Length: 314
Length: 314
Image (tube, rainbow over all chains, first blue to last red; front, side):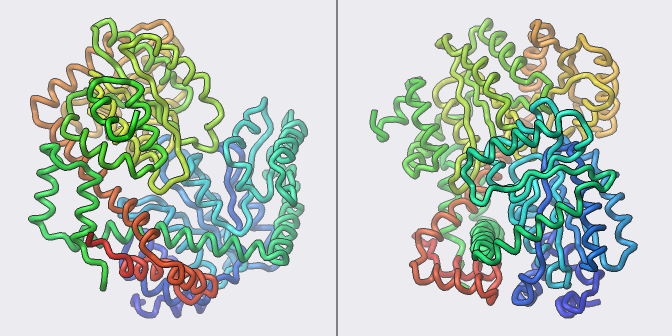
């Protein structure tokens, strides 16, 4: 399998080709660039569903049951499990990955996890490209599951066509977790582990908070019990209805364009860093380093001068 | 107070001038640039201490007690409390901020919190500049406290001269939280809430993990009980000893240079985005937008073309 025919093999639906291309993206390999450009016109067909929420809410179990539900409708599914390797949560998630991987004995399911690597430009830049690979591969549904709790994880899930925000019942914590900007990115809200005490109260509180945001239409707040599979088909129905309405109103097209524009803007920064590092000669680099060490020129001025030296007109 | 004399007033030690300049940095105001450049040669005098760790470990209480301990030694202290407004933890921290703010009736203490704003370039870029303002203002010690749990929060704390990693006792969780790369950024480890069961075991486990990293000298793992003030003076002593040794060995200078170089590299990306947005004419922008909408040109190619159109040689 050469890099050159990877794009056509992805378009033919080959999981292995998609896996290989996502590895190139993940490692920041420049060979991914032309392949992604080639695939781009063939994307936009899949329904992209983000699943996010605080740790312990049961996101992975819910994602697994969602996949089974879509499979019963004979829709093919690809799952991108994004793990920004948060240093404080990093270790605990292997079990989840393995559980999702067990789905992949079904040829209609493809599961891929993606972790942060030490290259210029992080997961926030790499994840949308990986989603498009899975879209081009022919998945009817692409699930982007983020495991973290930070802003970047939510941002990644928020690039989806429909974002499912999962929380659980419990003394205000579940609702507390939904505060601070996160209400805006959820399209469908889920109180999972609904057999536990306080589920209805959490649902009520979320509904009250959503009323205050004056969003129209107001997102639904559903109850699920993912481990028993309860409420999952209803969630699938709501996701479909949300997307049908968003397509109808033009909001889906608007949102997708906004995501692509933001991605291009981020990539300007990533490419500028990479190009500048390649373009600057060692003497210039050493000079900047010396000036920083002696505290003669501050980092912002060094950045401005480095950009002026690197020539982007190619 | 005009922008022009802010730098000299910061150098004169005026808290209000520092506050105003940090607000300019936070909001991405270009007026901050020349002021920061002017201050840069006057920085590098303060000892910068990062305090980070998982939620609930008692970071804010410990930071407060550290400040009191330094004040008893007649050292001036500035605290920068960095809150990346993680959507899942954002709401819970107001109490901590207020507690720290109560210290600021002492003129030898200055407390400032910094939150993420919607401008190009995030907290990771703004925090080091704010630290230098506090350094130039004449603080003997600058504490950078991060409240979050994600990679960016740890990265911010990790730009300090000495990073204190705070955890607490508890069934493996405290140690678990220290995994995945975080062992490398801690210079001094603290098991806080040491009156709780399992404190000694957590200390032993951390020591065992640190032995495996083969770091020399091996970081200390200290026990504290911050709410009672126990172990805090000992922690201050260890921080001083760590920094004296790092200064002696040249590791402090090496680390500071590495931080400045990385900051300059990040700022290349931030400035490239800002400049490109300003330089491109509306017709070019509309053309890119149209191409993205019709899925003719992918985001990476748009970024490359935009960079080529923007002229950085000024």
